[in-house]
Image (cartoon, rainbow, N blue to C red; front, side, top):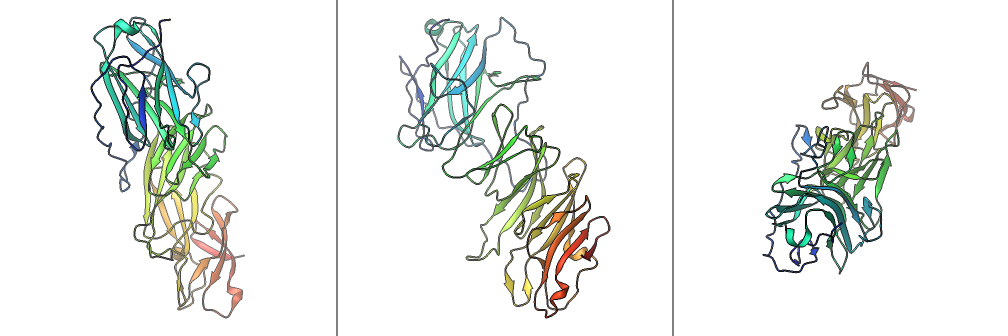
Length: 389
């Protein structure tokens, strides 16, 4: 193997408090700050593809191709296995990759993404006289020697003469066209394993939804404002989650909070907006999914009261077979609940599914003297009837 690849210039980037380090021997023109990438629109109700380039189907590299491949991220390029997650406060991360059949005159480009947005970009000619045709790159890194790299999901894409390179993890359809890893944040991380234990769902910094596969490789599915709730469906392929907007919240209350309900397909890497509410979702008990994955129960409302009115009720969703649509059933549509003027019937705590169509929840009533009307009610989503148990 030839001496390992060394890029042409020493550049210090001051983007998001981080720098991009390339050990060099000769100077090169300064890089321009890349334009921002348009994030996923929160109001879109159309499936959104998270990764724009799928793995190469049936990929077989041509032995004569100029190629970058088998990339991995490490703390020490000389003596460390590749890893997909790094602790908070990590100062420097190296990316190591192989190359073959390189020649003079080729143009190499690297695009770094942080939390789904283009963060750093480098484009330069390949120095064949210095690095030759075959070898392993070991000295390219991103770093911040002062406070450490920012937490979040990182993705690297590399090009040779504009052609995206198969640098990522091997899949049944061939190598991926990107390398993923993450820097974990300080503090707590919300994490839940899929029912089949083949995936982990993680919320970083309160607003980044990421999944890790069995190898620990992370893929960011969504970046929102705040993700207070997420839950796996029984099929271990779909995640239901909330994106919360607090911009209109009344201080000291939950009034003015607006929630969106989304579903993510982790295999197809698509997300779909299912429902928008002018109130908070999941205040009591979060989200409960029936064992067959068809129905979802949650609460809707701020929980704030005014005289005998209390803003809180149950809402049920029936999932479409393709997970891209839902039928909404509000508590007021159920027959059998007490109908008392100037009072509110509301869930006092979380409920549970006792069958695929029957949900039992403790209900209370405001401004009544007959407390016998309160208690556990069974909501049958098939008949839209509620019966006191």
